[in-house]
Image (cartoon, rainbow, N blue to C red):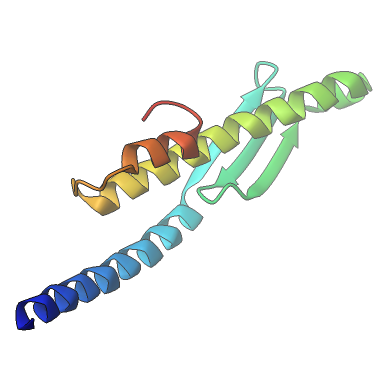
Length: 118
């Protein structure tokens, strides 16, 4: 019975360490930046590693043409590209945080997070 308590204490310690690493990773993701572009750079979106949009840049020539339909097409494309990059940063952070631990289902979870194979 005492051996079981030791295992629980070890698991609790590991959970606390993992929580601290997770908080650190979240802070790092908030500081990291990714950029998505569309239309050969006519639209550019900057996000942080959390997927929050920080900046949207639309080339003045596109605005001058008053091509609303093209802008409406390019903005989501640039946002989606930046979002995919932010998700990849998150997945990389999760892999680094787990440091080679063999966690059942981790690869599948990361694959779902990024929308592709990890």
